[in-house]
Amino acid sequence: QKSHSAALLALMKGTDDRVAIHSVFNFLVGNKKWDEAIEVLRGTAINGLPRSILSFKQTVSEMEDGKEPRERIREKLAEMVEKMKGRGRFSKEFSLRKESYYRLDGPQRHRERILNRISKKSNNHRPDLVMEEIHWALKGGVSLDENLVLEALKKLDSAGKWSDAVELLEGMTRDPLMPKPTNQTVRMITKLCVDSNQSKHIHSLALKMRDDWPKVAEWVFLSHLEQLVTDRRTEEIFGLLEKISSSRVVELDQGNYHDILKCLKFTKEWEMIARLVKMIRQGGKVALDPTMVNYAMQSFVFLDLCDEALDLLSNAGDIELSAETYLRALSICMKARRRQESFELLGKLNEIGELESLTNVKDWHWDEVFAFLDEVEEKSYQLNSKFFNLMLRRAEHELNVPKGVRLFERARDFPGMVLNLAAHNTMLSLFEKTGECERAVRFLEEMRRRENAEPNSLSYSTVVATCIACDKLGEARQVLSQMMERKVKIDEKNYNVVMLAYLRKGLWEEALGLYRKVEEYGVETTIGVFRSLVKACISAGEEELAEEIKKGRDQRS
Image (cartoon, rainbow, N blue to C red):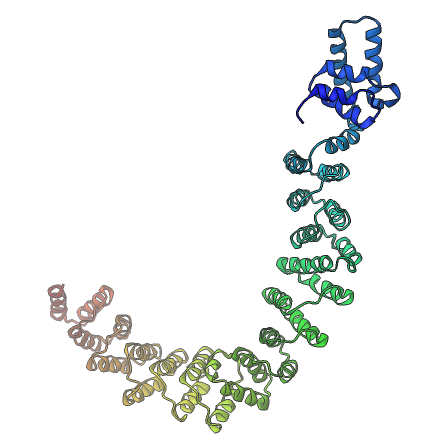
């Protein structure tokens, strides 16, 4: 360490320790201290020399007997060293030098040096020498710390050396010079084995350590499970769960099952979710909680498993289930037309004050919807208008006029129910999409008579569009007149469409009358409609009238 050649020579006098001779000679030759190297060779017996140094001893003896000058002997030694390096002779005796090298120095310095060497070997793309460094450090009596092991694992992971990692874990449980395994080191080793598809080897080692190192065995299986969940390898999760159950190495808790359920939900493995919840219930070691029940109910919705959903609810015990869970169960029962069970779930929702959440229910049969309303009215449950708005929009989407009308009348007569303007406009939109002009006009009149449903611009515009689509221009003009009387903003698009329809039918006088009426109201007529109106007047022999219209528009401009 101090490069003290004189002290080394004093130590070497009369020794026959092959390790010491080899280490010191290599050190002196490596530093080109030829004279000191010659002294080491001269002071050792032939039977105490390693084979790789014996030739040096013989060469030096012969040259000295031949009275060769010291300079010539130095050159000869340098020449022999270069040749032997080329043939790899020194590498064959490397273990002897390495072991001595670690014995002659302090442990703390060697820990730093090994860490440095491991990093350097990785940088030189030689991770295969990591275990060799650790092996000879231990053989030299150097104790390793956790930082060094973690650094070594990083290099092994980068090279995919899973077998070396498993060997390292095994050494940590047996060699007193190595640090004890920690959760972090076990996780890294397990991850390397899983990524290399060699999990069976780490499992085998964990089962062997089950009695002496139970915590390490537990960490192995939990780390493997976490890795599968993170990578969403759902097919392998159940295989690992069965192995955990049979080996009894670790007891999973609710948190573990939550992570698995989240993973299965993300990948939409609904059948696996149902299977896992069934496994948890049969195991009996982990109690179901609201989160697990909700995940299971979501899977039952997608799989249409009504009986399983009802069985799960009946065995939920004292678990405080959320409205979302009850709502999903209610949706399953409604789709399966299980009316009695649906009404019981409806009562549960009413008990927890969550009837408003019914707006999230979809795909109900219409018969079940009306039966549901009868039950709500009979039990005097409080239901707000959101549910009716949702169902009316569904009727609009399905273009189902009979169901929409029936539902609206049912809602209008429902105790304490006040339908808002949005619900009325939904009905008008339904009539527009289905071409029900007369119903739309009649419905608009009914809205005008109600205090809580005064038509707005959207209401009138929808009816005008319906009349235009049904070629009822008289009704469309009448609605436009009502809008002007009530000072409701007129939709320019609908007005111009009515004007074009009049002109195409040759009813230029009606178009002119509407133009003058709307002109006073301040609604803009497009240039195309205006030109068509002027041309229609000229074609009818009313040139003066056409000029009058043009002058009026120019003055307004």
